[in-house]
Image 1 (cartoon, helix red, strand yellow):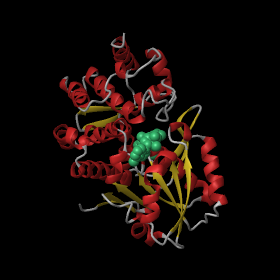
Image 2 (image 1 turned 135 degrees about the vertical axis):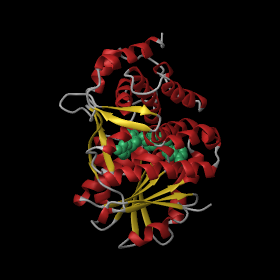
Image 3 (image 1 turned 90 degrees about the vertical axis):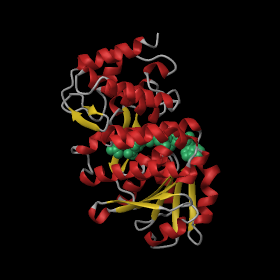
Image 4 (image 1 turned 60 degrees about the vertical axis):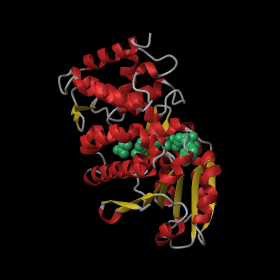
Length: 370
Ligand code: NAD
Ligand code: GLY
């Protein structure tokens, strides 16, 4: 199969996202041109390390590699493992002109990218995303960071990678639940800005989830093209980039409410959040009545969570969820910002959403849990 290249155009900091099967095996050739000396420091997690680190070592050929494997999971994305990583990189004598490699999902990409941003005031890094979520979203665009007890992703920096290698073959070992969670972010791209892509997902989503590599490559490429375009136009989220947060105001509140545990994965929260955002849009008379049903129908057809009723265990009431939303990074002057939609494929940033409508959508969704 061919390898696709999507360029993220950011002037002197532009970079390629390479997408296809077999990229890990040719990591040395891909990363080699960036290296000033034949050596990389790899940050990964224990699960990915067991599955794919040896293949990376072989793929790097003459480039020597040192590696740190952190515990897998969202809890790693905090100060403790972050400072451990920075100290490890210093202990490994990673220099200003060296390259750090993030091999893993969004947790590793965000944490290692942030470590690269602060180490010696900034070291270049390469993302090798191993989850669908990381391939279509977190590895591209330079948002790096960790969580605080005050909330998710509240500590971080913009630091663009120098290269992204999205090896579609690595998705074969991903558990189905993690794959579908990543698919939540794929659907998000169709919903926010490409109705034809959403049509395509409705037709091809099930075969893609079942393992069709060509369909997977197309979905990753289209998602990355959309993200690359938005990031090139609005790198630091002054405007358009906020569209990428479709579903995220709800998602971040739900993740906080479920303690960032495996009761709800990030991409699952995004999918539920997208369904809620379309529900709010419809209640506000912004989009047609059929739109939220169509979003839900596709998520259901994929076997994904799409309602608050699909989240196991207790949740706070509507008021509690609204309070958690107020902690979101998108709060401006104390006002909640939502990404709403005029139609599938046509989202926009709404600054003055009637909280009463959001509350009643949440109340009705919570009532379905009883
Ligand atoms: P993750 O990194 O925790 O990976 C999910 C699980 O899959 C982990 O247990 C991991 O060990 C395992 N795994 C990874 N690759 C595997 C593979 N190929 N085979 C088998 N198992 C594998 O989670 P994620 O869903 O990739 O990322 C979620 C994180 O990404 C969140 O912290 C979220 O905030 C962040 N995120 C960041 C951005 C951004 O722009 N920076 C965007 C979206 C999400
Ligand atoms: N995932 C949201 C962004 O990159 O802006």
